Length: 279
Image (tube, rainbow, N blue to C red; front, top):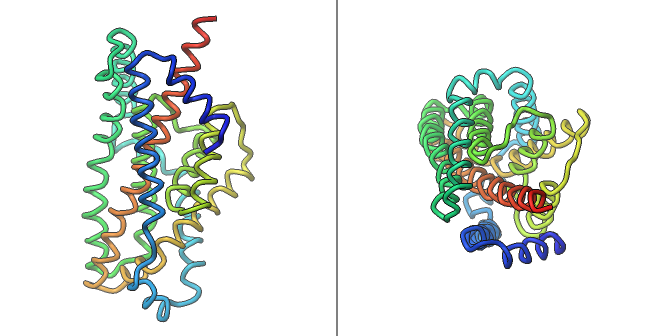
């Protein structure tokens, strides 16, 4: 975590009213818990055995499939995703929560934002499990990737809206890709990417098409590295149920991290707005 930002936020926590301070402290504990949990998760004995039989070119194939899925959905898929939930209702619900928080100024009104983000993803995780198991029974591995990527993006979009952030811009797509990529890393790489995300959300930034494509490739590589053996297993009929269930686990990991980072961004912007109003 960037030291200056961490210090700034701790200092803010000391002067803000109790509800905001408590929500910030809650967030910090959840972030630390996530980082510890991811660092403890390692590759299993099962994966070590699979390494001997998985085709060497499979990871490259997976990278290409994940990258193609992200590009296709960013280019043409958002309208399809948006048919599965009401974007306007999500926005109006956020406005109501925001107004309630400004009037009530208690912790319950602040908790409503993260509760809304959790409710938005619970159904997606359940649906992902059904789809993953179904593909696993049929022995469908790599063709499942566009469906899985679509579910990841739908879930993150709904989290973003729960905290009042639109997701359509190139910069927001870049931010979302950073979240997905970081959530799949461990140890130093996770800490470094987490710090970069914390810094990114505190400033205005622009993203070129080239930078977006580079982030798509990096995120696709992280996904393919993490899911390599499980997608191989998923391609085997019946046995592939084990691989199909991996969709649920990794959707949990990605959305848990996305909720934390969007909440941090929400709290940071609230603090910035409060400072502006006082000037």
